[in-house]
Length: 313
Image (cartoon, rainbow, N blue to C red; front, top):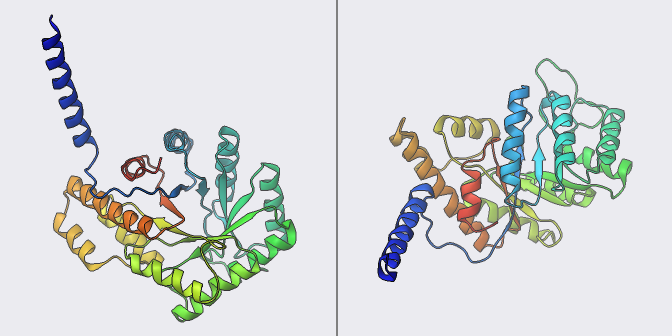
């Protein structure tokens, strides 16, 4: 075979590879040049099979070099044992930091102190401090009724060992009296010792910028108190609406309408969702967001594709 024929074969192969990549990964326009840090959230699984799948997901997402993985904690610590198990397993499996969620509602200081000591023994040095939801049938909020109380207690009990992340709400906490009160509460958590905040998911960039700018008016800037943007990939309309309604997050009308128009067309929903989240992340990166925190739902896709398409890895 002569050199000309070999050259033609190489050209054809390159063309086929390019077409394959276009089919596998949705095209992204105006890819941002600057990078942002990123991380993922997991929730504890209910079965051994689920944990096995989660570990496989962890291996794949961890290959992207995220900043950390957070692990959620059920209402009133209802998933406590499963959270502890996955935190311990992942902490031993990798050097990537594992960041457990901690909720204080209904727990005693003694219980929380023991949990902090346990995490410290595992080498964990970051936690997400939350109030949590009161479990059904439980009466009373416990010794530490609010996240602010938990932040104070962590500092009292463990000093500066833990980097403390707290929750932030670009569209206001559903139980807050006003935006002003909600932002004041976040500022109080910062002054009590919180180091960073992770937002509830949102699709309106202006809501994030409003929160950031209102904190800046109080003298709290991203350099000292990073506001990490919570990102929820869109893969299924019913799940997204359920999550948003329960969390008090807003889904813009155009997104709701478009999802409704797609009906059961899963492929179109995923494509639309991918493009919508990419645009959201691009705008946030352009605004110098310090980090993106993907609510992974314990899945590889579309989280891996989003990170790769944004050029974050």
